[in-house]
Image 1 (tube, rainbow, N blue to C red):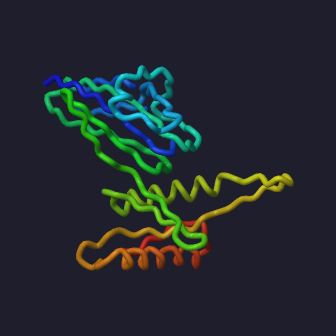
Image 2 (image 1 turned 135 degrees about the vertical axis):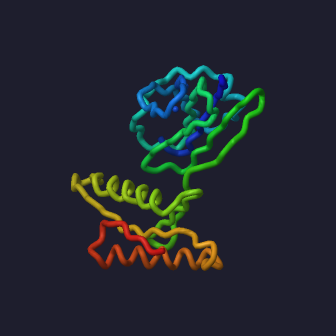
Length: 206
């Protein structure tokens, strides 16, 4: 059955129009070009973005430096398969928010994804992931840990500073967890487990 989808993806403070065709049978498409638009003032609405011609391009696998403004990516999908379902999967080391806009007919629908990052205490940060299991959370935590370890800071005097991070991860227990503090305390214990084992690692506590 033919079905045409237009999807717009808005990434806030971080780092896709690509044409994809879906046919019968299981397949993975990851070799295509993405078009994007840089909203420098982060003021444009979805209706305004829809009217803009996306001209800048990137490969489907790319790295873009940290941005403080909104970046929009557009993907057009022609589904010729008998099954209308498909999976759209995004991988990124860290983003603050990823909103997925889908349009069928004249109506736009938005699905908010991504993570929330907040400072918690002097040198601690909390990363809140929605709709994410512990396995994917650990995978993201490990990418964050590795990115920090592999980067360095050059001071004004030319001295190079390398830093590492210790991370603790947990997930919501819908039966045992009565409030957010229980989750934070468990995650904090996992954090100190990483510190006690030598630092620069990810530990979990469920």
